[in-house]
Length: 148
Image (spheres, one colour):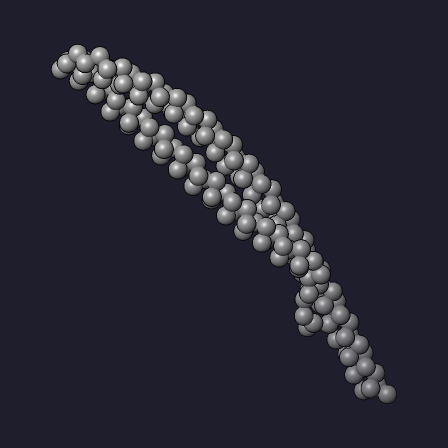
C-alpha cells in the first residue's frame, strides 16, 4: 500500500500552531484578569482598614487633621477602586476576545482535520480499488494460463 500524503498538511500544521498560540494568549488574558481582581480585593481590604481606623478615631479622639486625612484616604481609595473596576472590565473584554479567537481557530483546525480524514478515507478507497483490480487481473491471468 502506498503512503498517504495529505497535500494540505502544512496548512493543518499552521492551524495547530495558531491554536497553541491562541491558547497561550487566552491563558495570559485570564491570568491578567485574575491579577486585576486580586488588586481590587486588596483595595477593598485597604478601604476596610481605613473605615475601621476612622471609626476608632471618632471614638477615641477628636483629632481633626487625622480625621481629614482618613476621609481623604477613603476618597482616594474610592477613586482607586473605580479605576481598578475599569481595569477589570478591560481585562474581561480581552479574555472574551481571546476566547472568541481561540474558538474560531479551533473550528478552523477541526475543519482541516476533517478534510484530512476525508482525504485519507478517499485514499484508502482508491488503494483498495487498485488492489482489487490487481487481484482481478492476476486471477484472470492465472485462469487464462491454465486454460491455454
